[in-house]
Amino acid sequence: MALAMLTAGLVALPPVAWAQAGLSDLPVPDVDPRMDPAPFDGRRAIRDYLKAVLPTRWWANEPEFSLGAFSVMIHVPDNWQGNPTSAVMRLCPPAYSVLWSRLDRIEFVPFYRDARRAGITCRKG
Image (cartoon, rainbow, N blue to C red; front, side, top):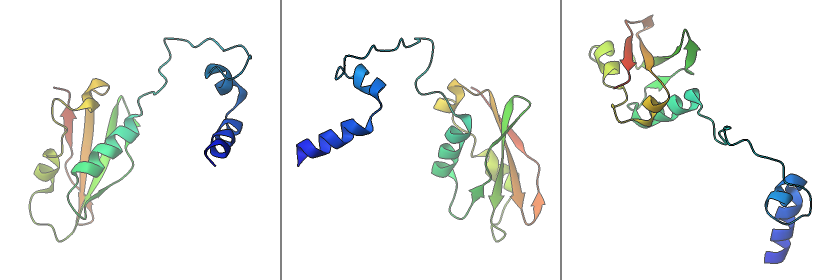
């Protein structure tokens, strides 16, 4: 059974992967060391961060990149009490966050009771 699963997994791999794994006599293509095998995706990093820190029943639009920064609209529930701008300000990533290794600023714009409110800009360190 295990051999069948291993064989099925190998068959699914492209021939280049076989060569890189040493399972084939095909030449291994040169890999450019300057190329990052896992490039940074700012939208995904911000989405993952917000998923972890947004309060219950709050949600965010897809981050948009414009003029060198990402901007995200944060939807605050209508029955929430308080100042939405100051609440969104508390969502800024801390100085030690990995987001700041690749980003310089992120803009959060609260959307509360059917209106766009004053936004804030979170900056690196």
